[in-house]
Amino acid sequence: MDVQEIGAVEGPESVGSSAALDGIMQQIAEHKGCGTSGGSGKASCGSGAGQGDLPTEIWEKVKNHPCYSEEAHHHYARMHVAVAPACNIQCNYCNRKYDCANESRPGVVSEKLTPEQAAKKVLAVASTIPQMTVLGIAGPGDPLANPEKTFKTFELISRTAPDIKLCLSTNGLALPDHVDTIAGFNVDHVTITINMVDPEIGARIYPWVFWKHKRYTGVEAAKLLTDRQLQGLEMLTERGILCKVNSVMIPGINDRHLIEVNKAVKSRGAFLHNIMPLISSPEHGTVFGLTGQRGPTAQELKALQDSCEGEMNMMRHCRQCRADAVGLLGEDRSAEFTTDKIMAMEVDYDLEGRKAYQEKVEEERVAKVAAKQEELKTLAGESSDIQLLIAVATKGSGLINEHFGHAKEFQVYELSTRGAKFVGHRRVDLYCQGGYGDEDSLETVIRAINDCHAVFVAKIGGCPKNDLIKAGIEPVDQYAHEFIEKSAIAWFKAYLDKVNAGEIVHEVRGDAEIRQGALINAA
Ligand code: CLF
Ligand code: SF4
Image 1: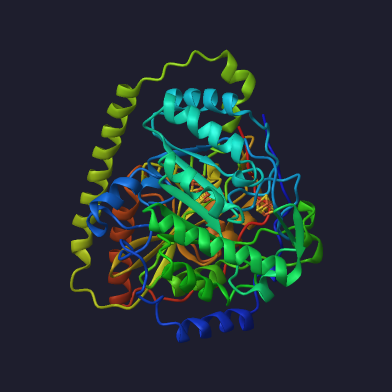
Image 2: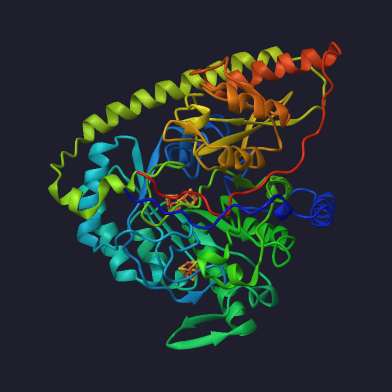
């Protein structure tokens, strides 16, 4: 059992001020999309883009990558191997004893691995989880500050598990020096964390960077970092490597500036932009945690993401996972694959079996999309401008298949006459603990989905049902084990019918909280 609780949920007062939200909304009004000067293959509608929205060669690269395709993340898993402990910069949201916040929640890595151990782990996981399609190296430090270990791991895996996509996440400082090696290993997916393109802002995020045996501080350090990040991004996209940019949204420091970052990375050919909330609690021991720097509220984050979703692909399903995460995004099976357990495992890397399993997954995906399209027809002719959010309890496969009390997160969909669109997720405390409902947890769940009109579940008990209704959130269990989007559209159609008939009045919901200290690794 490896359970780590980081921090506590903040109270309702932590929800951002309306002045802050107004400021972002104003920026959005002034920001007409994200320009159109991006590199090739960028014309799509977000990481939710499907087969028909992308050029074939891009679709082939993203269709089973759970981070680069929102649709894929319901079906395919990724794993990280923690082979890269050192880092060459300091971020104010990172404490070195924790994972890299580029790609992980601030939790402790259970084990650091050698490249050989990592290769064995990949084979063990791939043999057990046939839908694991991507290996990422994302820390716990920076992979390119540990180039020998990172590339040795890639070399071993590309030889023994050729069907697994290789993925890399970096702060970008050392990136220009390694682009050719990355391309040489056929790494198709690289993430760069870019939080600013203005060194004055960067100096508030990065106290120092270490480059060519010298430590730089302040604006000089931030200037060096941003120059190297943007140079690395250009070099990768020139070689046809799909680049995702991660940005941490830090209210009052870079929140409005991230619109400029979005333009800058789009113009250099980034494929996807992932704006993530700052996670900051005093318990993390980070500079931001200790100085009380808050993270954004759910509405602030969504408003910024919406503002950048012109023609730029936006990722909204990131789980800020650990540097040793294993499984579907949103689940963590790393405790099943500790070094002790792996060494004792009989590994049977069945390439044909993996292919056969993934073909079945593809059939499920086709059925899911067809069901959604069919249901969408019922909204044809509706002219309502009502737009609302719902929360969904799911264990994956695009189904409403989780009990309310067992949900560790809820997926959030925006419903309108255009259909159902995935717009995020909310991590929560388990409501059901040891067979009983926990009232304190229920309060935190309600705060986390407070901006939603309904919560879709496979099953729910009487007590939480009543409390949700009191809070104005409708518990919906009539679509248990059915497809999420199809069910959501059917429910929304019925909602519109009731509004049109005058049976109910549509009301706008309030803001919601982003969990600051969720359970990050339970097994
Ligand atoms: Fe890992 Fe990152 Fe590759 Fe994904 S994670 S290296 S691109 S395989 Fe994904 Fe995790 Fe978010 Fe990263 S959900 S933190 S975006
Ligand atoms: Fe921490 Fe990652 Fe920043 Fe390095 S790049 S300081 S490991 S968050």
